Image (cartoon, rainbow, N blue to C red; front, side, top):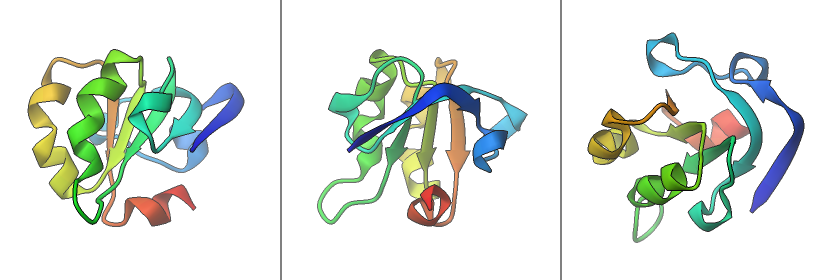
Length: 99
């Protein structure tokens, strides 16, 4: 599922806060890394078999400006995120944070 957010909104306008206070402009939302385009927030959600964090490197390669995940996802993707400019939003319940 991918959703476009018009001309884009800041994380704070979306009610989200990134680690380290980093801000990002978000032009869309994707829960499927294959649908991420430049400026998207990629929601790396826990799954029944695989954590969405496994797909963060792909989302970053495709231009994600921000990543939303839980603490487990942040730990799993720490290496991929270390050299990235993308903002990281960690939520206890990332699905609720999207609501």
